[in-house]
Image (cartoon, rainbow, N blue to C red; front, top):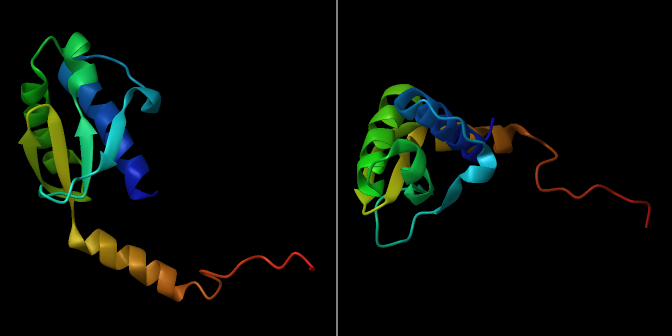
Length: 114
C-alpha cells in the first residue's frame, strides 16, 4: 500500500474511532506539506468539523494523536490551525526506495513496438 492510501485509511479509521462518523477517501483533502512547515503530507480537517462538532484545530490534534498511536508510517505531527501536518517515518522512505531499486524495470517504459 502506498503512503497516500495509508494516510487516507488512517483518516477514515480515525474519524470513525474518534467521532463515530463514516467518511470516504473523497471526503479527505490532502496535500504535500508546504516547505515552511514540518511534515510530509497535510490533511485538511475543516470538513470534519460538522461530524466531530469541534474546532478544526482540536480535530487535527486528536487525529494527529490517533495517527502516531495507530499508523506505523507516521512518527510525528504538528497542527497549524485546521491543518494536520504528518511526518512520515524515514524507514518507510528507505523501504520505498529500496523497493524501487530492486525492481529492474523501474523507470522503463513499456515498449509498444514503435
